[in-house]
Image (cartoon, rainbow, N blue to C red; front, side, top):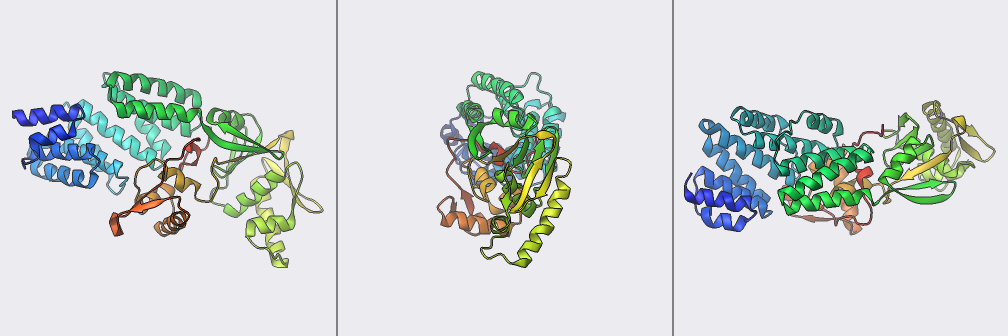
Length: 406
């Protein structure tokens, strides 16, 4: 390794991207291309960084497998920052195995943590938790320890295990302090602050109350019959009935729960659920059919009784009824929660994370842009979407594909 390459590497390790570029900006050899790519990534020039890292990986070739694997890992991290999920995780795993085989344990661990973070962004909490459990963190550097602890905390927060999340965040903050990396310290502080912000609103008997994440966990474990509008389902103690794929039935259930302990009038149900102001006999017939379907689904947890005015929810075992709603209103709350991280997202990445079609996401983004809630940068395939960070509350319960609380 020549002196310029060594000096550029030291500058990058210290976070001095411009200093590193002064040493290698005009060089085209593979190590210089790789260092230039990392420097551009630190400066936020992700497309250029990705191009340089790919050129470096090709130039290293099969003979220099260690250097090539490091380039693949660096490119995967850039793709994560770009919210590009098109690549195969298998390529990154092969790079991690190549690094482990050549005793580069630190970079191999970093590659596996990138995979964990990718699963988290896509809402695959079971995959992320499984990957975290298989990591060998003994003798890991403080920065990698902090990243692993932050990932553990996010899995715990999104699974509503707040005690475990606080412990993981304490480990992350301690490791970030030892690593002396400002970005890690900021991320750990932001995650700790999220635990103390409002995460949802509770409606019970006509009264509203804002709840923090630990209070949401307490409510869900209390035995109250909870209609969860964050995750679209019905919860009572340890029993969970998902209605995420039954939007009409969930809308009916929520309307009945909001009317508890009274009933919900038929025409009001038709207007709210079927979006019509002039109900007729066909709507009333459809309401009876949908009520019958809902009654069968929630039978283990509650009855739905007909009244003179409409229908009433009657929970079993004398339970109370509460409605848990997101901290922000609107059908696109999950989309706004994803965009609220401040990173630019493509429509394809959003569709993959939310489990919707790309065309559905595009229509939603156009509507949000017209309302001034999001903005786009770039055009055509380079177009990306972002929104201002959401402050004052946490949207952890709105992120996609989260596991139901246990």
